[in-house]
Length: 137
Ligand code: DQA
Image 1 (tube, rainbow, N blue to C red):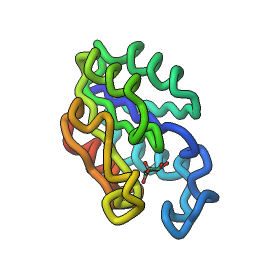
Image 2 (image 1 turned 180 degrees about the vertical axis):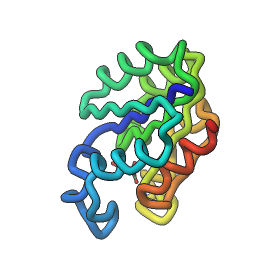
Image 3 (image 1 turned 30 degrees about the horizontal axis):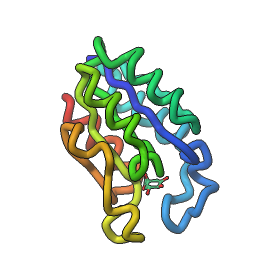
Image 4 (image 1 turned 90 degrees about the vertical axis):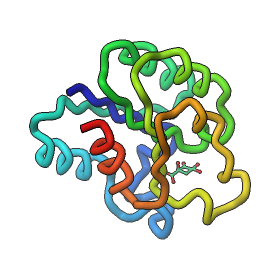
């Protein structure tokens, strides 16, 4: 089972960025815990602040991986191009958010890509990623 986690813009700052909203744990330490907890899953992690690089990663892995866990950050709300990339690949994508986007500003209530995803998980902190991972097992 090959699963790719992709984090979009500003998620490299997890742990330092707005800890009241996103928590104080960095993604790398959480990812290490996931690797230890799911030793049978071939898990990989990629982060980019660049829209085109996220699209390139989706193209690269989107025909042979079993699942993609994607937190596209703010691109969730703006990117037709990432939404099109998700529609164009074979691997199912689960959209995740750390915060509950529906409890926040209205511009975060709309996702450009949700309709092309298998499902959405929002508001469970870093556990959102684990719940998405479990949806593929
Ligand atoms: C986010 C929510 C987005 O609205 C925001 O732009 C992010 C993070 C989340 O994980 O809660 O960067 O995707």
